[in-house]
Amino acid sequence: MNKRAVALIAGGVGLAVFVASAAALTHTLNPPVQLVDETTSRHSRIQCESQLRQAAEETVESSVLVVPTVTVVGDVPRRGVAEMQPQR
Image (cartoon, rainbow, N blue to C red; front, top):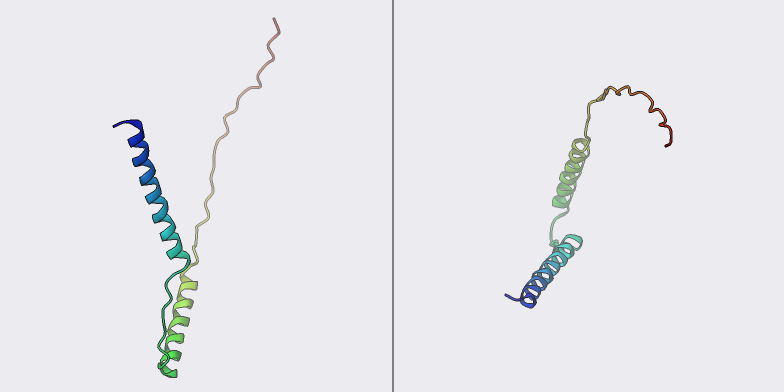
């Protein structure tokens, strides 16, 4: 293969990666809209809200990370002060 063919293949792969990355980022930042049925009863809405509230409370409690206290001890090597060498 000559250099031009290799450059074209590399450019094509790079372009495909760029397009796939842009699509994934777009999907992440703009998730698909979930349609809610307007005929749902008030009771089911209240039940869903209470379930969401419980899930949110559990998430807040479980999102705390407890890290034990750690003390790092190190010995500093004692080195003498470098003496000035006379200039030659």
